Image 1 (cartoon, rainbow, N blue to C red):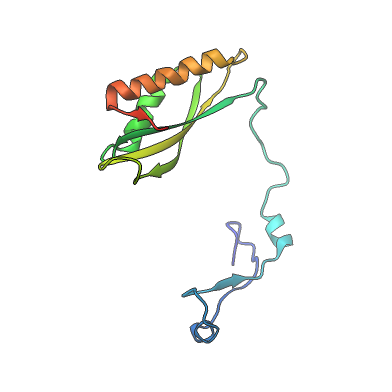
Image 2 (image 1 turned 120 degrees about the horizontal axis):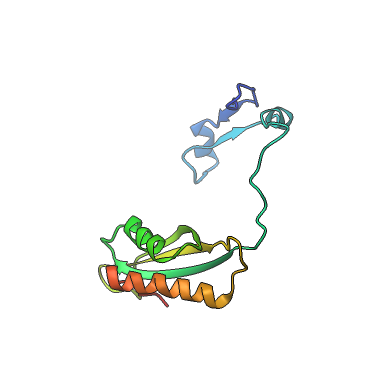
Length: 148
């Protein structure tokens, strides 16, 4: 096994399938590695540049919306970004669900909305207004509804 920097980290092996059968293992294949952690440490630069620290804390809100199962998640995200305003820094899809209690042809998409304050502290009222704007836009443009 080699890192991207051509440092050998150790051997990788696969167990013989006959051994797995004899042990009645549930896996079709088992692979294992013995890693040289010191070698792994040499692949990381001693100094790494990170972004500036945020001066004001960000706030996150999770929402789940029900849309037609044919609705592309990218279109849902695009509506959210357009409606979220300048404070909406990121939109992350973290769950997709189909089945009861949703109706036939429906799916639920759950998103994490991250709001970053910029130059002023975020308040709950401002965030709630931004989330309401996102939900209203989804309802009007895509026929979505909040799951819950």
